[in-house]
Amino acid sequence: MDWQARGALPRLVLGRMATQALGTAVRFDVFDRIGPGELTADALAESLGTHPQATLRLLRALRSVTPLPAPDIFQLIEASPA
Image (cartoon, rainbow, N blue to C red; front, side, top):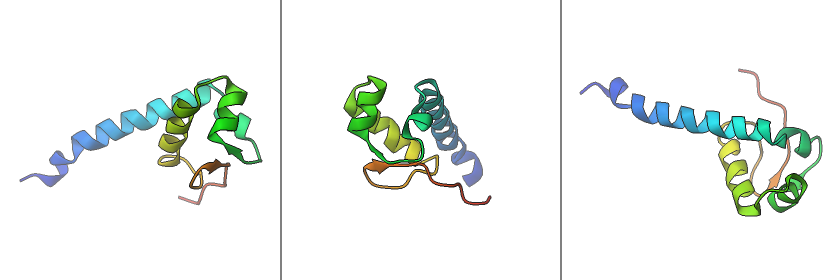
């Protein structure tokens, strides 16, 4: 069995999800709204005028692809060197 080919579809799906999450965050100015401080998903949603649960789902998706710490207080941190 070709294990590399078998893993291609999940990588494509996760890559698309990551792209969508990052694109949405940029469109809504999420990273600038978080800024140097900390925000809860509810506070960020109020600032953005978005639904709190949808905002929380977006932040959790971003946590998997960007340097956001856990759990429900969101702040930007410096990216680790590649």
